[in-house]
Length: 210
Image (tube, rainbow, N blue to C red; front, side, top):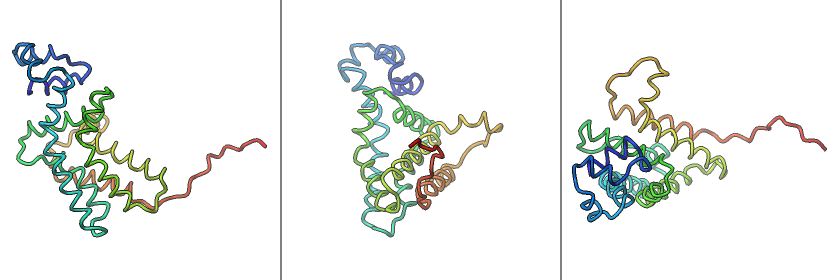
């Protein structure tokens, strides 16, 4: 499992073969086929090992938001989704990095088996998150809500998984980052984007011919 996780992070799903995993783990290929059958099943097992606890915590927090009704605003709903992957309970630095990098791979890999596994694993928490957020953004029409949600999730996935790639443009490193501070920064940015007052659509400025 450790060997498979490391390879999926390094090379992605399509760039990793089950033979590569057997070689990295110094195991027989037949052993992997016996326990998992194929690469798809192995990938799901790797993700389940890391993400089931995250999914459970997301659901616990989102259900608490639902029970609280309007007392739990956009900030609480957003935190319920993004804090668990960032604040892995009891995890050391190496484990947090593994979760962060695998999370980024799983959520951005375009391969159909990967998308299917992620949808199955996070279906319940994702649906509840969108439902709760929609009830708190009634001033937005369907298109506005869709694009704000898309940008919010995109910002979260990139900042959580690939934020260190911005360092080359920033020009200097920030040093060790406090996870709670990172949560505050990402949450604040997303909430301000989602909860901003709706604006009327702007004209494209292109005149149509009669």
